[in-house]
Image 1 (cartoon, rainbow, N blue to C red):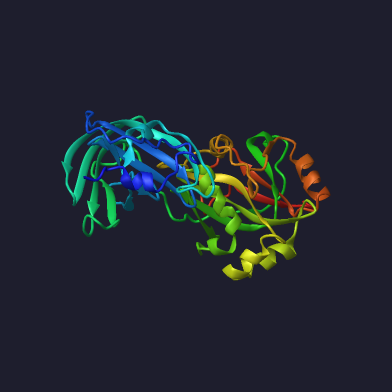
Image 2: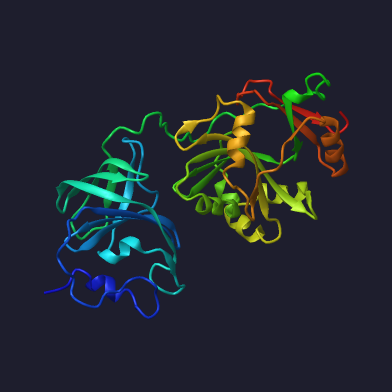
Length: 358
């Protein structure tokens, strides 16, 4: 009689991987109540959802993570059973080994079984980060990986879906604020780049230009931002730039903006893009559009968005002329002053572009 962990063992060498590889026969005992979700930074980021059942962890790999909204169905790939010891495993699986990459525990808790057969698994999760009723549905037969997972319960209170794109806040031309109102504004450099929104969900990044056109294929290096954020859902606003000797290069950015996806991959080394992020529009199921700018910036600063191809530039309050002088010295187009109490509005007058000679 075959052991339920035979396939698991065939794929792993216990002398080469830190994963648990038990040698003896699998003990069919336990109370079948434990579940764990592990974030797996393998060749493609995904989340492994595992349920203790019959002495093993029955497992699915979910590329985008469990959905929060009940109307969303996501792919769930049924994988080999794992040993129960895997429920506490965290570590790095070496390159060249099956599932190579970093594995961390994302959530753990208990579950209740409502239905469990070859066609549907319906459970209620009681975890630290996830709770509610979920259904895993097999679209084909028991030997096919073609499963989908849905949330059956309503979304948590206040949770709203992540927009694909929102009309960007307008920046209108103007001059510096008067001294009496200067403390009502934040000042940031006008970089002169290409406006872009980054939609981050399930570790995947989609970039849209100011008109809502998907330009993700031209800027491959920014996609790594998704793996950094993991399961965090965000909609960000910013600019795409190419730097040359520390200053924005209009020529380099032009090359990237007009390249095909294949050409863009070849240009990454010569003209790497940096995504300069200056606003957050949606965060973890909550719209930020109605928040004052100062609060959105505080949230943005708390997200730790610093990486090789993305950054959050500093904002300055007060002494706008000094910021404008620094922009001029560095050859930038000018500054943008943003009303600290202003909401994010496409038709507002809360963002004022002040030219270098202004």
